Amino acid sequence: QVHLVQSGAEVKEPGASVKVSCKASGDTFINYVVHWVRQAPGQSLEWMGWINVGNGYTRYSQNFQGRITITRDTAVSTAYMEMSSLKSEDTAVFYCAAKDNTGLRGYDYWGQGTLVTVSS
Amino acid sequence: DIQMTQSPSTLSAFVGDRVTITCRASQSISHWLAWYQQKPGKAPNVLIHKATTLETGVPSRFSGSGSGTEFTLTISSLQPDDFATYYCQQYKSGDTFGQGTKLEIK
Image (tube, rainbow over all chains, first blue to last red; front, side, top):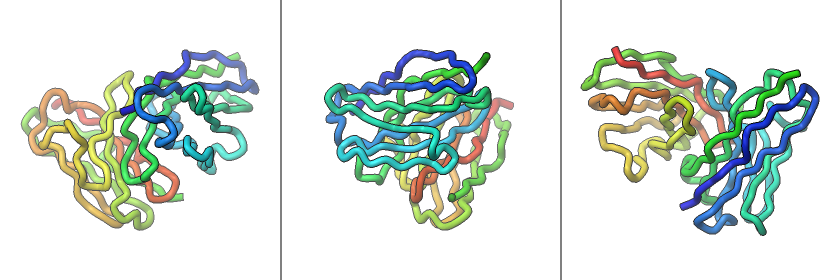
C-alpha cells in the first residue's frame, strides 16, 4: 500500500507557475506510476499525465502538453507536477494518484488534493 | 483521444433501489475501464477495475459489466452511504474520465 500526501494550497497570479508535490510512504515507490488529475470547481475529473517512477518515463494529455512537467525524486519518494502560464480557468483541485506499474488496475491510491487558485 | 460519455448526469433514487449508470467509449477499450466513487471534498475511491473486478473491501452490491465500448455500473440495493458522484475512466490509451453521475436521494 502507498500513502500519498500532497503539498498545501497555493494562490497564484495569472501567468505564474505552480509546482505541486506528492510524497509517498509505505510500499516501494519505484513500483508505481503516478498520475495527475485536475478537478475544476463542480466539474469532472481531467487526466493530465503520468510518470513511471521506476524509469522516469512520462506521458501527457494533449490538453496539457507543453504546459506541464511531471518529475519525480526517488530519493525522497516524491512526484511533482509543475504547471506554467496559469490562467483563471486553471483554478482547481489537483490530485496525484498512484497505480502499480502493471497497468492492469485503476488508481488505487490518491493524495488528498491541492487547491490551486489563480487570481489577480 | 478516446472520449467517454457517461449517463445519466444526475440520478435520483430511493434507498433500496437498483440503479444503473452507463458509460460509452468513442472506440473499443476492451475491458480497460474503472469506476470511481467521489464524495464532496474528498478524493475519488476506486470501486471496480478491468470493467468487472470489484476492489477489495467494496460491497458486493456494486457490480460492473461490459466490454468494448459499452459499460455499466450497477448498485443492486442503494444504501445511504452510496449517494455520491460516480465516474468511469478508460485506461487503454491515455486516461479519460466520464463526465460523472451524481446520485441523489429521492
